[in-house]
Length: 176
Image (cartoon, rainbow, N blue to C red; front, side, top):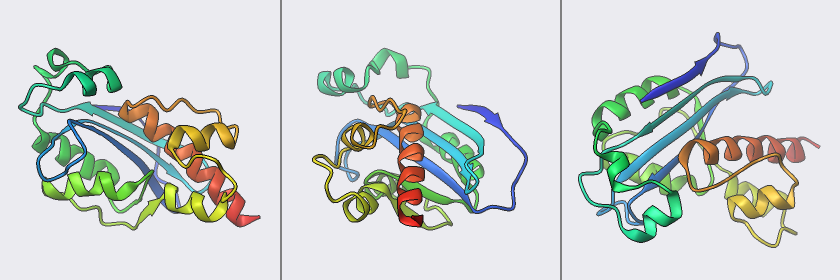
């Protein structure tokens, strides 16, 4: 587990862009292997980042290793989900959770016993309303379409960073 940076609290609304990497797509039978989160406020200030690998207790499939670049061997000494969740919950606090297809991530987190206290905001859903002309509504497709300085790559922290940049771009579009 790693709290990468932390800044003083703010009076602006707080958000946490969240992303998970998992062993598969089914929250009822698959497991979390990586958590990434970026806390920021409405003024655009980054307040901290959190990242951790998670020991899923199973061998990763070749497809997941290829997609994420995370190998089973990388997870041998990773902590189990319980302490990671405790630290993530403390990091998120009452902030609104932002994610691309956020219901996917929250489904996995709910299954292991954590539900955020703040609202959940889905950048995929927001994009379908605010950028209907986009050809792709994937995280990478939207980042390219909106010419965002972002690098989604199926790793939790970089994808959480991209989700944050996308959310801010969509928020600005809505404001205009």
